[in-house]
Image 1 (cartoon, rainbow, N blue to C red):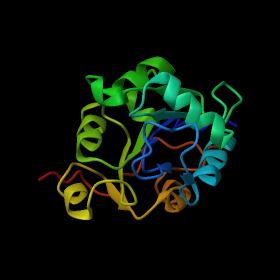
Image 2: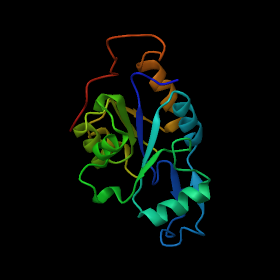
Image 3: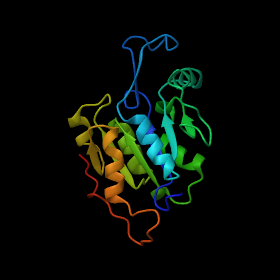
Image 4: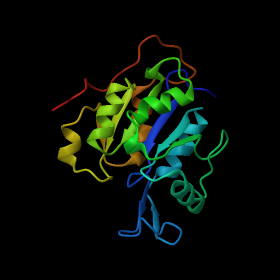
Length: 186
């Protein structure tokens, strides 16, 4: 089943999807990794709707692949995620790059669930349908609240309910998409 309204979901890997043991960034092969609650269930739920998953990583490709391998997350069309963008902080706009790599005909077919003001601003510039601030990452609630966003979620476990509430069912045709509220910027 393909969702006619949502085709790409972009997530920040570092701190939001997985936490790396403090001070062990240079030793990813042996560092303790913690999957954030609900992340895999959220990915599975989105994939069942036909939504592609893109992860934005702060690490280079080699270190990102070490993390994904240790989590047993594959990167391919039928995998846990379909694409990764490494060293995202060095990209002009990694959200727009993810949309380009996914071949979206309309940026509104995408959403971003991110945890930094910079990524929220870039998601806004990329014109995603849902620009969601996730509060279990590295930035404080206040920092995220003053960045442009449509909604703030405590963690990724809340994402499926948010999407169900704000997007029409994939089988039900509609001409108007619902936004939860106007973007707020500080």
